[in-house]
Length: 320
Image (tube, rainbow, N blue to C red; front, side, top):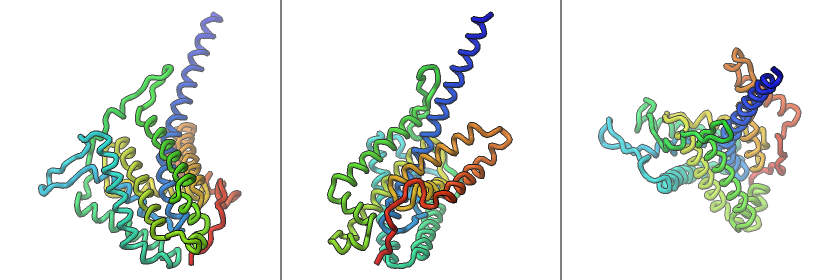
């Protein structure tokens, strides 16, 4: 009888541990997605002091670039049949080009304007992209089957982990590491860090503003492209405003982590993703529909006691 109880307790402990590990993987995966999106926002804000809400629409562009519309309204060409090492750079190039185009056609002309004007310009770019997608692809959501192998599961020590979650976490860690090395050990990276710390002083010291800003927009576009590929693989569907909710949570993550701090953007992304997942797992079933309300309540409490976020950025100097 005693051995039977021990076996029961062991089974319960094993099940609890499997559940805990699954929740941990889910939290890290969602946090990774938000961290990548927040890092793209943080790159632009750290230099231009621009909260680019069109970043979510760059994510949408990346997802829709998987579908090339044809002359026929009922047919389209899906590039998902290409090898992944062709799809990834192709989508990254497309989104980076759109980000650079938005900078050259819109943001370049309002760099010296007030933050309110910059914010309004970003909303204008956002609505322009959304309506362009509606015009070209229509309002009906489109189903895609990108990299179905990533939706398979790996069995590890008795519990199953979706392969896509592992890829998302590893991809985020790899990109953050590469970007960190780039910012610390390359000439352009040092110039970007100088511009992020004090944009006006960096210009006085000879940093070419246009080149640094273009690089920031290009890198932001690449990060948005990676998010779009991971998100499209996870959801299996496209919609004209699919990137907007991600951008919203990414913005919250940058505020939580500390506006102007790239490290804070990444940390805030993970913090928001982990918080959302834990609330989904721990709240009673009757309260789970209100998960977002609880999450934003916790975020408000954090900002009340720490208005500068988790990592206080260097002083936000005014541009000249």
